[in-house]
Length: 88
Length: 198
Image (tube, rainbow over all chains, first blue to last red; front, side, top):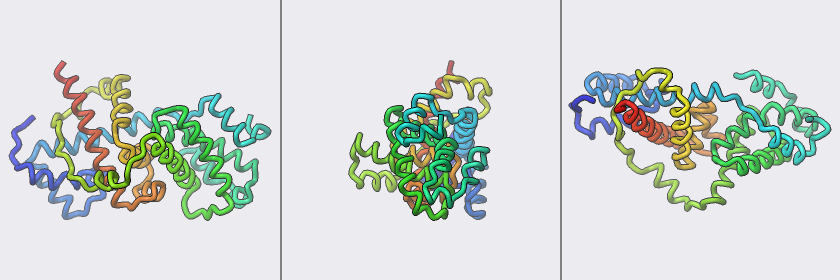
């Protein structure tokens, strides 16, 4: 961890922009302003990078998790919908 | 778009609007795994997820004649499923609406944990323990934040689609997504900070 060279209020102002920044949806002037701030504020840089990494981890884990319906849940669903003749 | 998403999109809307049982059975077959997984993540309870799953398809079948096709079938099904999940959540813990408004408007908490764990080894980032932590952290979010996070960051819906599914404005989706991401980031940072001390 490094010494924080900005006052907390300045960093807090940028906090509201971080999600849009992570999604590449931040307007160009705000994007530049945030990047200028991060160039001198390691804490904000760490928050942005770890937020992006958090999103990446959820994506990665989700990609590996195939959506499957347990057999018993499927059987009861098919019965409830009276589709036994079409879905075995 | 995944293979099953594409096949879902290829189903005949005309046949579905006429409540053709065979095409409806294909819709159930192609989408029920995804819908169940989403409901399980939203509700954290298998029995509740199963109840919501059955209700989702019963309501979908009833509503098919009026499906206009303005959104994709998947988004339409997600909307019905999310409504079922919300109804179950409200039944379990009725929350006055004012709490929702306060949550959206309250001041953002400053990040608590400032530790750079991005370069942790891949085996650490994707260990079974970390995976369990990811699930537990998402379950700790409030229902409102979890719903937005799951649809947007896990299911990969756009901000507009998430807003449509949940009946919210895009701005509210953005606010809730930011809060959810900051909370999850803090949770994971605290976890990795502990690991890095060992």
